[in-house]
Length: 174
Image (cartoon, rainbow, N blue to C red; front, side, top):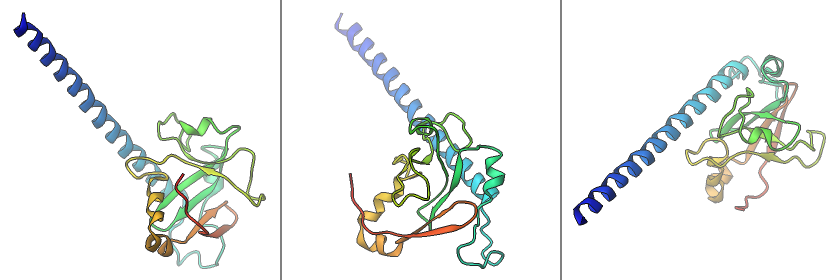
């Protein structure tokens, strides 16, 4: 009887570990796929050729081209090597929690502007997931280090007509 119980427990543990391992691998593959998808979007919709676009403040983002894929796109948010993502705004603050900027179901969601604000407001709230793989807002944890924050104190929001520059004022971990 004791031998049967040990065998059953061993089989259950193997199944549990196998299932957990499968989920971990599946999540890593999904994260990598999503990261590649956003990199493709950046190459397709953002002009990184700085020589071509010398006028300070002018847009590098082809918003009209991206709006053909998703009318909710309102811009592109960028901070040197920290983040570079399309910025969307939905009818509520729920939809883009689990949909990407191409309106596809996606566990990582999107970086999105609060539906109650726009760029004319003096306070704009931008949401995004803090991903374990450091995608989306995951790299923002680096801003806790003063030296990192000092070297990355400028970020941009490109609304398709103009590239707006913002300076980092403070960092708080909530």
